[in-house]
Length: 64
Image 1 (cartoon, rainbow, N blue to C red):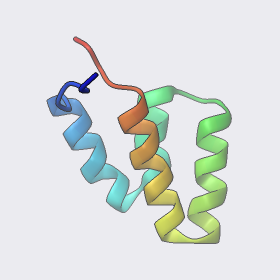
Image 2 (image 1 turned 30 degrees about the vertical axis):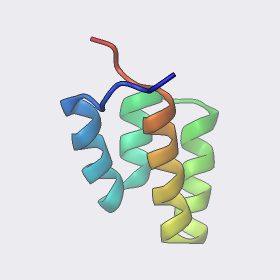
Image 3 (image 1 turned 180 degrees about the vertical axis):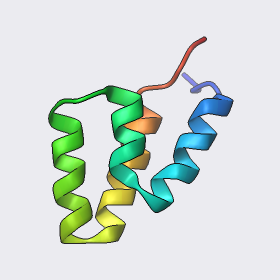
């Protein structure tokens, strides 16, 4: 089944993830394991942190 298009807030989170990936994950999922994983990936390498943030944003769409 096709996924719906990203909402405007998700598009803003994608752009935020380019600069500060943990912030976008925190906004999307709150404080939890996902943000800790993203912080570790962001510290170890910038690109893995961005890719993880984009994955989190795309896996958890807003249906508002």
